[in-house]
Amino acid sequence: MTEQSDKGETTTITMTVTSIEPIGEGLRVCLDLVDYLEGDEGVLVGSTGHGYALTLAETRETAAYPPRPFRVNCGAVHQYVRQGDRTLYLSEIKPGMPLIVSSPRGERTVAVGRVKMERRPLLRIVAEHEGTAISIVLQASESVHVWSGSSWAKPVLELAAGDELLCWLDEPGRHLGARTEGTIVEL
Image 1 (cartoon, rainbow, N blue to C red):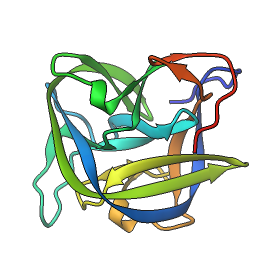
Image 2 (cartoon, helix red, strand yellow; image 1 turned 180 degrees about the vertical axis):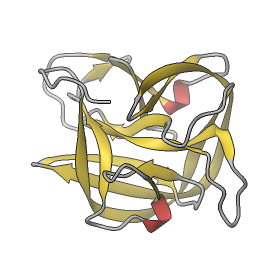
Image 3 (cartoon, rainbow, N blue to C red; image 1 turned 135 degrees about the vertical axis):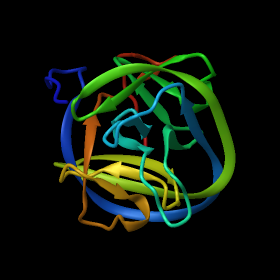
Image 4 (cartoon, rainbow, N blue to C red; image 1 turned 45 degrees about the horizontal axis):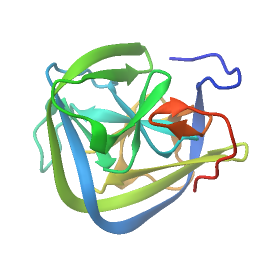
């Protein structure tokens, strides 16, 4: 999924992971959807309006978890979820809401069946490209995967500095989810 890069529109690029750090426990959000997702589908999340990373559905079996292809573990409650030209905070999502599910192939809309919040250990991941940085805060769990720049799923517990992530850049500046003009600094 590639979008034109005019001012105010998002752009799909590969970014390089520059740091990964455990930041302790926090409230994380799982979204259980009313349909199964494919292995390359998930939700675009980010800690700032600068951009988002594709956090994938739990379609993979791990040593500790069976596949849950209806679930996306979206990370910390404060994060943005990209929904077309708007954003929502994870804390704003409610059962029954339509949610845009993204993949490198495109987007589709699926309703949320349940929102599950629990305290879990979190990782802050920072990725950069040509002076632009984005960050995401995800659960430190073997069931959480992101889409790599090499077109395959990568477990967050195996991410290292130098790895690439498929990301969607955006212009920061939001008020109630809609883009606004003005000066904004987000870290």
